[in-house]
Every structure is written in structure tokens, then in C-alpha cells.
Image 1 (cartoon, rainbow, N blue to C red):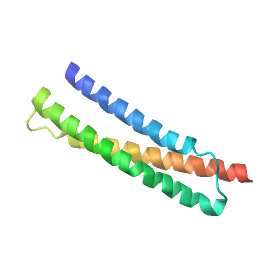
Image 2 (cartoon, rainbow, N blue to C red):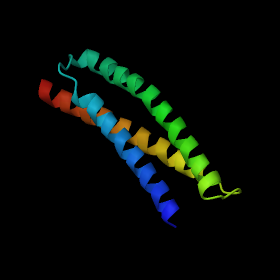
Image 3 (cartoon, helix red, strand yellow):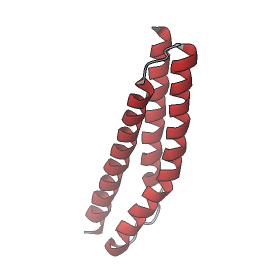
Image 4 (cartoon, rainbow, N blue to C red):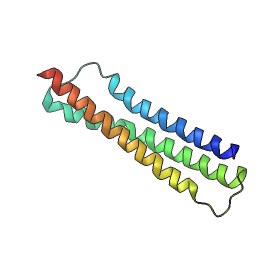
Length: 111
């Protein structure tokens, strides 16, 4: 039971780190372009986040798989795939939320 709790805490920490990374990627933008270039900036941020997200998804999925098979010794479980889907959804929602938030903030400040 403690092993599973530890695994879920690691996954939660990873999700929190990726959410923070998405927030930080927009928070460090110093100069906000005009509204015509704003969408280009948002797409550029999304393109910068994707490699980091992919690397983190591969690492955490591998850790979940190894943890499930070696430490928990569960051979027929595919819980790591469910956790993978949860990670993907969390990262996608964080990116969407912070992109929309940045867009709304930028448009509000230009008015």
C-alpha cells in the first residue's frame, strides 16, 4: 500500500512540476507583441513546451512501468497506461489554460 501511495505522489509531483513549467513559460514573457503577433507567440510557447512534455511523459511512464512490474510485482496490470493518459490530459489542460489566460490578459492590457 505504501508503494502505491509513493507512486501516486511521484506522479502528482510530476504533474505539478509540468503545470508550473507551463505557467512559468508564459510568466517570463517580458514584452507582449501586438494582437497580430500574439497568436504566433502563443504557438511558439506551445512548441517550446512540447519537447519538455514529451520527455517528461516518456520518463514518468517508464518509471511507472518499472515500478509496477519490479517493485509492486504486478505482471498483468496496465495501470501505468491509465497514469500516462492522466499525465497527457493534465499537460494538455495546463497548456490550454495558460495559453487562453495569457491571451486574455494580453488583449485586456492592450485595450
